[in-house]
Image 1 (cartoon, rainbow, N blue to C red):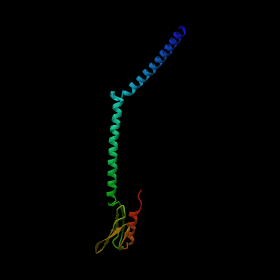
Image 2 (image 1 turned 90 degrees about the vertical axis):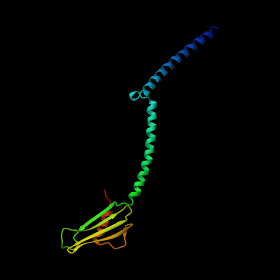
Image 3 (image 1 turned 120 degrees about the vertical axis):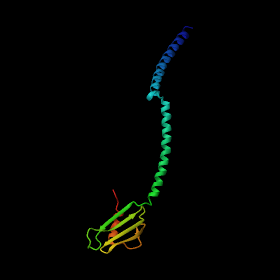
Image 4 (image 1 turned 180 degrees about the horizontal axis):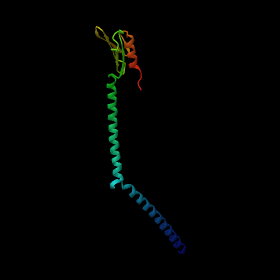
Length: 156
């Protein structure tokens, strides 16, 4: 009976030491949890995390809506004038001041027109030539071709 008692006392001491060790660890963990759960102005970590999830859902919803809106804007913009070239020149070398001009305006797919306005002593005459997919059905004059090339020139 003597040996059993000693074994039980040793087991109890070991178990008590283990309990004390675990209590110290739990106490440290509780302190760390309290530190994390005290957010700004006393807000808990749980409410902060819920707020982040709410914000994330809101951002995801707005992000997909923004993406859809951007695609729609890109689609609409493809048919708007975005390339412009203009050349001023003196058509008859008599008036000076380069009052004549060739203006080219194209959309994203190189559809548009070249407007040529010729200023002379007798008056002003305007001509327009349609551009479809970067090609004019009517041959372009020198200044019109220059305006067209300027419209196609890449911009920085």
